[in-house]
Amino acid sequence: MKTLIIIPSRLAASRLPGKPLLKINGLSIISHVFKKAEETNIGEVIVATEDQEIIDDVKSNGGQAILTKSHHKTGTDRIYEALQKLKSTEVDLVMNLQGDEPLIDIEDIKNLNSLMIKNNSGLGTLASKIKDEKLFKNHNVVKVMTEKALNDLNFPKALNFKRTFLKEDNNIYHHLGIYCYRFETLKKFITLEQSSNEIKNRLEQLRALDNDININVALAKTSSIGVDTFEDFVAIKKIMEYKNQ
Figure 1 (spheres, rainbow, N blue to C red):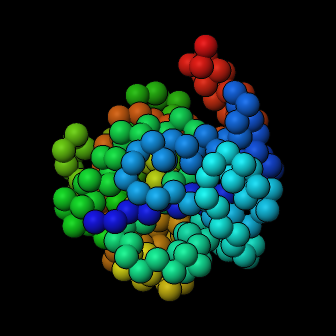
Figure 2: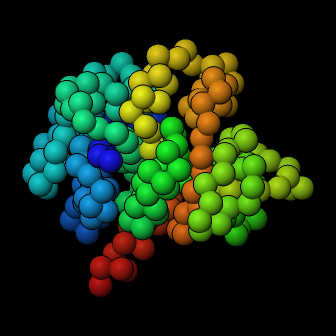
């Protein structure tokens, strides 16, 4: 099966404008992400963006990028436009990676890809165990409830995605914003109207559940941090600089 990795990215982030081009160890965040994606060796990697500066940066660092329109409501819509521009008819799976997670674990991406193929799933994502109470209470951290406890081998369905769950709820994990779509599922997903549930909770994945599209969840070994604020950037920069010594 052929997998294509597409990374949506834009400069106009509400909380930290310009974050894709912030540099760590001399390389932009978006270029760190696409290089990680390339290391998985599961398929071609493309950055989809509305900003020429991101295109220039990615290309200058040896990557591929496609210019998309600026009106997209979600990253998934941007991915689909890039897919149409590529005119690639032989793609079976489309992996949507977040452009602001330079610490994403390569093995987790590879595992999600292989579970999608093995289970013939339409849509899959990653989640990690919540070991820190602060993370559980943090409204900015999206959680997923699964029908069974996650382990290294299974790929159970997601029952719900929320920012807050009760302490007594079972099988609650930290949701990582990585999705793998079967091409037909992606095609169907972007024709659907945004659901009221999705708009209210600001969670795109609820559109799938509201329209009876199953989302399978794989256990991620690592809980990757995204760069949402300047504090996140400083924290990730420290970790990556330390690793690079």
